[in-house]
Length: 549
Image 1 (cartoon, rainbow, N blue to C red):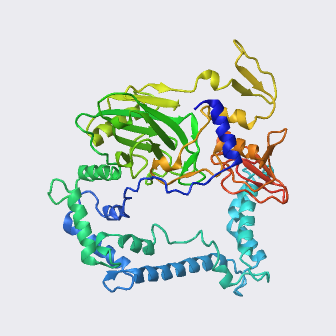
Image 2: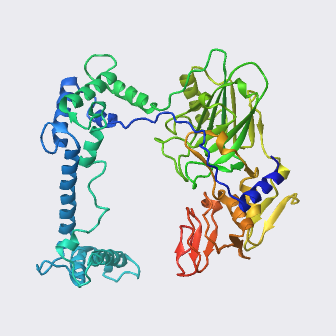
Image 3: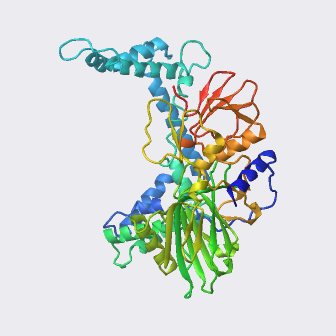
């Protein structure tokens, strides 16, 4: 698709954003079941023998069995929850009521301030005077202590729900909620929930025998030499194997040629998102060259990407894809990558259940490429015969590994933003623009995404998570779209004026961030502004991490 046609596609999407009702062709490979393997593994230190291990599990079981009835079920979760709530309230009351200086059962602002001053008396004294007994400069130590006191005063006074000027014990029990909750990864209620995910607890009840049986099974998996003792090497080897769970790859056929492709990102954006509207999804092409040899294609990228396959696609016996991103500007190694493809039958596509199975790279040889190639050799049973990588690409060709990019003349000139001072350009400046004023959305779009936006049929996408059309295109392409629809207008300073209900384009982080002015009477936009600054005319409030204070 040419750059001109990409512009037309953006304007067309801006005038009429159509939601496709058909079900997307996304892969529903089974997700890994919840596991307590790590919990059981923590009870196996180096040198442990089976009998001692089973005894430690016995003790652990009765700690979690809250009602001591010999089994773990929902009743234990509920009882642990009640007891943990009591502990939270007790800690909160103890923290606040230590400032009840007159012992009347209530805490006032004056008491908090006096009590905190007493607690910090050494810090205040040392900070106020240095070793020569001279006062410190303004803004030195005393300021820090004063801030601590003021913070505690505000926090406790805010508990005064009936505004009678004092905090009662009942009000004190709300202190720190919910941030001081003891429940969580280390709470007994959560541990009971984890234990109920053991296979033997499928009916909602776990017995001691079932718990120890699960532990013994794990012990024997770790004890590979079957001598009844866990060595350091056995423990390390098992943990390495466990990390690869969810990273299994189908074996390549005897005649297949394995091709490895990798990039940080592609030069175009996709008209279709994967998962959430706030995800930025790129689009790239893979052209399969003519031939008779079957191909096993592996693609690793940093950015979420939909790869469009064309050409002799019947040659592809298997396509394995991954990306580092699993959510908006984030990556969770225990979640699926955001990646998809068109032109390949779903049964030929494989997705990992984790996002860290293969590492992307943009240079070969490199440490990352060597590790990834080794992982493919181990998983597919063959090493890649072709390895192609580049930071940003428009398309790959397989099996040759040829890489195509948007021609430099179509990427536009080098733009240097200059706000003040003197700039000297030495050499050929015919393709250099010194930008003294604000940037424009369309120029910025092609600076970041020289390939524009590629329109993709959502019904044709085979993906790791459901694919849906964007309500608003991501990054600067979305700004172009909103301007074309009349929902946004850019002032002479380059700020974006919002006079209609909109959704923030996804991915306005870092260099993509801008300033939005939400005018009076206009609803606050949906979505995530990223690092952009949002100023609301009605209140003068500044929202977003990009606002200068």
